[in-house]
Amino acid sequence: MLSRHLAVSLAPSVTVNSIAPGPFRSRMMRGTLKGSGEETIAAGTLLRRIGAPSDIAGAARFLASEVGLIVC
Image 1 (cartoon, rainbow, N blue to C red):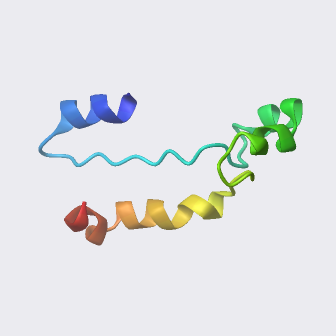
Image 2 (tube, rainbow, N blue to C red; image 1 turned 90 degrees about the vertical axis):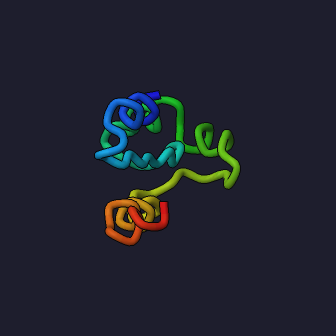
């Protein structure tokens, strides 16, 4: 919803992209992963694993690049 709101508010002068990676290891998820258990959280994902920041790094870099602005 935040991405949609920003896109409507900032268009057409700013392009808004977002990435929704699901659960991944980060400081924000640390408590959830520890409290619920990584296995439990992973079982609820399609790939049955917790993502890593490196899983979304390529997508973020692409969307932040000039190429990402042209393609999207």
